[in-house]
Image 1: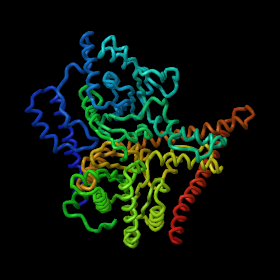
Image 2: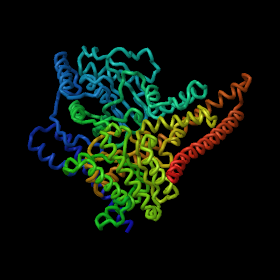
Image 3: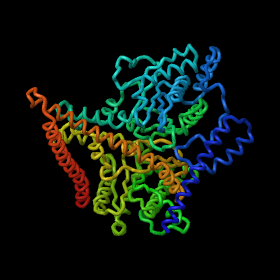
Image 4: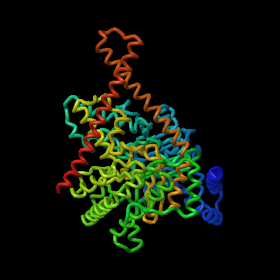
Amino acid sequence: MALLYGLLWRLLLLLVHVNRVLVSWLRVRLRSMKGRLWERAVAALLLPLALAGFPDQQKKLNHANPDANGNPVTGSRAAGRRARWLSDGRALDKLPVHIGLLVAEEELSYTDTANLVVWCMAVGISYVSVYDQHGIFQKNNSRMLEEIVRQQQDLLGVDGSKYSVEVLNNGSDKQQQNVLSCRPAVKLLCPDDGKQSIVAAAQQLCRSVEKRERSSKDISVTMLDSLLRESKNVPDPELVVKFGPVDSTLGFLPWHIRLTEFMSLPSHRGVSYDDLLGVLQRYSSCQQRLGQ
Amino acid sequence: MSWIREGELNLLEKISANILKAGPMPKHVAFIMDGNRRFARKKQMGRQEGHMQGFNKLAETLRWCKHLNIQEVTVYAFSIENFKRTKDEVDGLMELAKQKFEKLLEERDNLEKHGVCIRVLGDLNMLPVDLQRIIAKAVVTTQSHNKCFLNVCFAYTSRYEITNAVREMAWGVEEGLIKASDVSEALLSECLYSNNSPNPDLLIRTSGEVRLSDFLLWQTSHSCLVFQSVLWPEYSFWNLCEAILQFQLNHKSIQKARDLHREHQASQQLEADRACVAELLQHHGNGKPADAQRRQEALLHHTACREERIHDFLEALKHKRDSFFNDLTSEAAVA
């Protein structure tokens, strides 16, 4: 009997995988195919079949946009794009000030991630945090920075230097942290920025208690929060976009995500501007009651 | 209505449960039971009634979990942020909680029969004293039960919980029980309200919201997160199965991530111990570099002492927490 249930379980998992493959294949096909009939047919097929994990983009069937993805451009095309992206951002009811890009995939693509960063900034988001669970982006931050600059030039044209990027490393380049400017900033994060930072802050407080500089009763949420906030200007991420099939935060900044909205895209590889815009549109329509 | 629902699953439910149980099952599931007020609006009933229905659904869900061999359930019943609601609603929720915990005490024998241990996690001194007393009684009455565990987060937010854990460690330092260098991720976990439970394998939030709202942020860093659009009072056995299936699909990758994190934690602890020992040897070494054997001995000694300190500190913390509940129950007896 147990054997039978085991087999049935494996069959169930197989069906779910087949469904997922089908759905992602259809999504790719749809991007290159225009036509209302196709959309309606597929939407009818997808809706009952889709298993909701992190709510993802199956219901949003955006039209293909040949301009949005990286093609080396002439100046006017880039300017047009830039203007369009900025107006897309302005058209949204709300835009996150700080967005998190959580890449929960084993194979990382610097180009696609750089694209995402450039799009986020072009749309008007001030702070972009990029996270992967092995901290690979952070370890290779110079390569990441190069890639972001390259994509900026490709997508936004030569004039893209207006959106100059500061890659904030964990306090190691303190002089790069320009707290007063409102230029967009990119931060590359790793798991140690999460729980380990909280532990480091706790150690700091305990050491000051050891030295009788303060009492344990003085320790408050605001005190801990200010230690964990690198700069007063950087708010908690309002939105985290997760890329990949794993339904977990994988250690991403536990302290900072208390009110963060989580949205999911299937993969960061081959991601398009429209995918990102879809997520931002969904974010702009969500309501936060903040306990009330 | 009762906390404990008796009753078997129907045939179809039983078959589905058996199919799911052929795969890896979560041992600890956490629920953010969201959607009571929207449900009330939808059915044109009062908010209080919506919360009542929410409670009934909780009891129902516990029955399903029992049949699915899910031993531990944690629920987010009342956030510290919820104190911002209107006085009427807050008072209504406090009254509902009081009634439910009183009912719990009436069902004491049934709870013993099923071996249900109830824990209440949160900054309980924010609650009215009479509610604190009833909660304390419920916790103390069921604390020796060990077949299944229900953790109710009441007057809780994760940030307050983490801050409290840091405060407790600072208290330990103040009392001379531990040193500041003993502070680690593992020790912080042991100082949380949830220290008696393993981390949740699966976190489910209903009503379509896709945020954590300050719930178990530390404990769910490597849990499977499932967001479902159904409103909590309308939650069904099939919704639960869907969530468990999602957990099973993610199981391997999450397990891998967890193991990676654990390894990383262990190596960080070793590094921290080595750094402490190096500093110690420098102080006592008169400038002469210590040989490898001496370093190793010192490391083992340091680690053993650290573990002993931590053990004593955690005992003291447990005693402090138990006293909090015992004092309240003895007050209740006198009152």
